[in-house]
Structures are given as C-alpha cells and as structure tokens.
Length: 201
Image 1 (cartoon, helix red, strand yellow):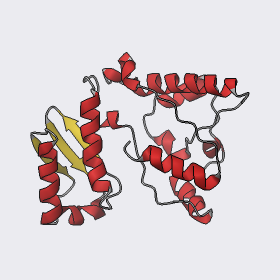
Image 2 (cartoon, rainbow, N blue to C red; image 1 turned 90 degrees about the horizontal axis):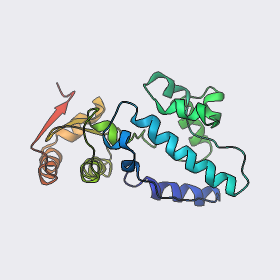
Image 3 (cartoon, helix red, strand yellow; image 1 turned 180 degrees about the vertical axis):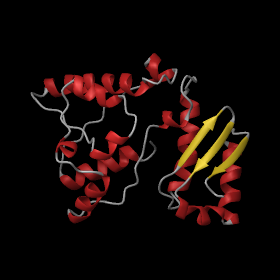
Image 4 (cartoon, one colour; image 1 turned 135 degrees about the vertical axis):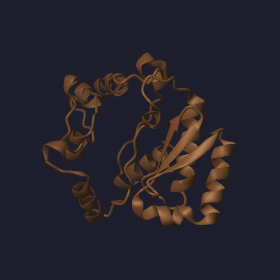
C-alpha cells in the first residue's frame, strides 16, 4: 500500500527498532497473479518462508505477526499459513481486537487512529489476472482520498469500471462538488471507464 513503508520506517525510528526491508514480488506467484481464492495463503506462505530464512541467519527463534481477534471473523486463508509455519500471534493470544489495539496504541503515544488497510488484490474479483499497473492505479486512487482525510477507502474494480466504498459518515465530505468532480476526473485519467458510488443512497 502506498505510504506504508514510510510509516513503518517512522514507527521503527520512534521505537528504536532495527527495521529491515526486503523486496518481494507477489506477482511472481501464479496463485496471486491469477487472483485465485487461495491467493492470500500462497502469498503469506512465501513471505513467511523468506522471513524464517532471514530470522535463522540472525539467530532468531520466533516470528511474530499482528493477527488480532477481529481477523478471525473474515475469510483469511493466510491464517492457515501462519499456523503451518509456526508464527506466533501475540495480539490474538491476548484476546485483543482492533478497538483494543487502537486504545492501547493511544495510551502508548502511538498512532491509534491508523485506518485498517488490506491488500490491493482484494479490490479485484477472484480469478482475474492482476497486473502491476492495475494494482498501482487502484493504489493511486485510494491514496488520493486518504491524503484528504478519508479513512476506510476501497476502490473495487470490475472490468474497466470502478466502485468506491467509504464509511457512511464520510460520504457527505466526498459528495462535496469540488471533491467528487476531482476524484471522478482522476479515475478517468487512471483509465477507468466509469465510477459508481457504493452506499450513498
């Protein structure tokens, strides 16, 4: 997701944590590239396998991830990869959901208002070919709105059309003519043939 690496670097500096970045191309995985229903499992398994290699080279014996209680309510094939490869989920073990984690983050002086993000591949129907260009244009469209204060932004794609999802309380701000016109123009410039709005009625 655009901006997430920069945010991770900033948090690592704040906590004085050694932060490593390693390149990984999910499009190299056929399950991901073809957006199969098991896409998340294949991607997570490949990432964790690489993470264990990095950990072993440094003598680390444990891998943690940020899975929390709320994640169990969704269809998340990647959770199976975590269990199979021995990743620990301390937030889940402590019984913490997103609301709890945000409250604790605020108490610790961290950014407890960071909106939930998800992989851009989830914006496309299963069993459709994903390309770097298509993922990037969705990312650019969503980032445009997040920079203007919108929180949970999802730009769903079907064929050449895009459908925008926002939280109910944010639709009035989006429907202000200056915002809506500019975003509609942006989606056209990104190559979408039409933009529909989900949940405004």
